[in-house]
Length: 205
Ligand SMILES: [Zn+2]
Image 1 (cartoon, rainbow, N blue to C red):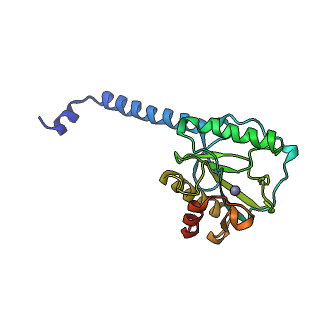
Image 2: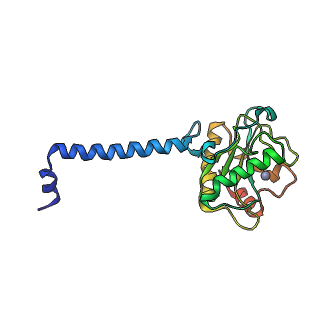
């Protein structure tokens, strides 16, 4: 008895039921995914929304609306690189530090990339990012790796995520690879760490 014979012996209603169950499973999975992730504008890119890390609302009275995006700046937090289950907590800690200690209106960065490769939504990109260093942040999209990258690189997943979001944002804002830089290219700082800086300079984006 071969496989073909088996298929023929299944009644039509049973085959239809199996197809329906498979379809329903996929639809439900896709719906639960869309509750935690939303595509960025423009090209499709999974970005975990602020709700995923339970951010507090931004204090927009302490923020300024930014002009047209003219470039992308790469940062690192220079803090601990979290394991996946701690990512949301680390993001809340950074937001709290920035809003309470630094008196900024929100977490400083527009996007944050975890070692797991997950990209998180930070500050709304229609507002200027904040920086502890002296440079004009107006028009820069700030993307920050969670962790310290002086001596070693972010994980392959995290670097892959950066390449994806940069490609996506260059297209979204009609920018070119030359518009991508690192924090230390603009200000007096070690950010984003020696190892990450050297790697970033080799990328064609
Ligand atoms: Zn930085």
